[in-house]
Image (cartoon, rainbow, N blue to C red):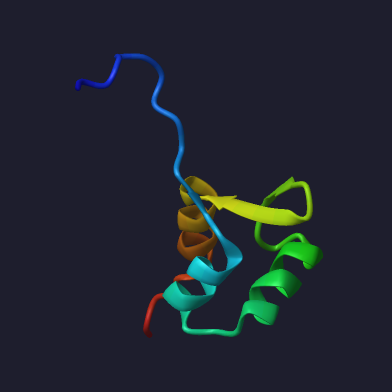
Length: 66
């Protein structure tokens, strides 16, 4: 079975997946979402973070060693 060509949809991560990637608690991710530091989509009672927004969050926080 082949996938129909069309627009590529972004992947989404759960707050738990983001927490595991960052090695922080789930609550830390929820605080980042609530403060607006990490963009998230709310679906019902759940949050999803696009991979693009997660990558942007990480890129904004890299610092140069100096």
